[in-house]
Structures are given as structure tokens and as C-alpha cells.
Amino acid sequence: MLPPPPSIAQSPGYLTKQENIAIAGVAELVIRSLLDKQQFHDPLEAALRLGISSATWPLFGLLWPSGARLAERMARRPVRASERILEIGCGLALSSLVGHRRGADVTASDCHPLAGAFLAENVRLNGLLPLKYRHGQWGSLPAASEFDGPAPVSALALALPAAPDLAIAGQFELIIGSDILYERDEAGTLAAFIEGHAAPQAEVWVVDPNRGNRAHFHRHMAALGFAMHEEKLDRLALLGVDAYHGRMLTYTRVQRP
Image (cartoon, rainbow, N blue to C red):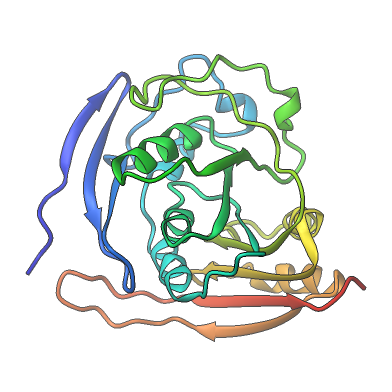
């Protein structure tokens, strides 16, 4: 049976939709997302000042196949009381929501001004306790402490850009991300960002839809003392489910080099 069509809502400046998302191993999640890739609303240029163009503005607010694959892995991971988990480039934070619902200590992070508001609304829609969110941005763009954007908007309104929360603090035993290798990153800024938040004994999960930028990332992570295991996640198309081609990259470090 095909899932019911999503409900569509109007927010000032853009359209959203709400639908039930099935993740193997956990109960369905109610997710509010942008209607499509054509949505854009940055009247005060809050996103632009963070390096987010009109073309990339809506990407945070869409559900992506790699995010679903990562969420499935989170649904199968045993919850460990002493483990802190960080999702980077979280977008709609599907994996964080899965882990949070199961009782894991999860912090979601992204650099988009609206990511925190969408996350708060999806937490509310699923009747969950608040989920920690922080501003997370790698590269040479402005840090959260340098940002002087508009005041945060109500998560219920989802109307205007919200100023990023405080930057990520502390170290994490597991760092996860999906579809974050979208640039060659020859300087290794992403690996350095991960290193800055990784505990001495840390594991890193990256689900990559074969974008072709893994080699650079592998080298930078290896230089930081992380060993890598690669697993294909290819999946044939089924009724109502598109085919998927990608890889699960698992990096482990027993101790700092």
C-alpha cells in the first residue's frame, strides 16, 4: 500500500508539507519539510551571510535518500548511556530524531538559519522532549559568534530566519552525517571540523551517495588517525521506493595519533 499524500501548508515566503516517514526498526516519524527545491525565503539575507545561496537555500529542508539510510543505521545502533552523538550537516535531522526517540544523547547541528526551527517543530509534531541543536559550520564562513542575524522565530510559525544557536561544544563518541561530501575539500576543512569535536576514542559515520569526493576525505581522515571501513548500500527499486546507490563510510580511532 502506498503512503498517503502529504499535507501542504503555507508559511510566509515558502510552502511546506507534512508527511509520515517510515524508518525500518522504529515507529513512523511525522516530518514537516519544504514542499520542493523551488522554495526560498531569505528577506534579511541571514542565509546569504552564512554563504548559503538561493540555489542551495532549500536543500536543508528536504528529505534525502542518504539521510534515510543513515537513520536506518541509527535505528539499529544500541543506545549507550555514556555515549554522546553529534549529527553534522543535519538538515531535517532525521537520524537525530530517530536516536533521540530511542533515548540516545544526540545533538543535531547545521549552518542553515532555519534548521533549528524546523527541528523544533518536528520534535513537537512527534511529541518528543526537546532535542539539542547547535550551529555547526566548517570552512572559512562566519562562525556562530560572528553572526548578528535577526532574532529567532517561533518554531510554530517557521516564517523568518532564526539566528543560529551557540556553536558546538565538547567532544562526541559518535559523529554522523549524510551526503556531506558534496565538495572535493582539498584543504580538509570537514575532516578538521570532525577532529575538533571527536572524543579520543571516536567513531564517525558518513553515508555518501557516490558523489566522487571520498578520496580526499579518506586521506584527510587517515592523516588524523582514523581507519576507514567502506560498505556498499546499493538497493534495488521497489514499489513506491526508488533505487539507491551509495556507501556507508565508518571511521574509527582508538586514540589520538
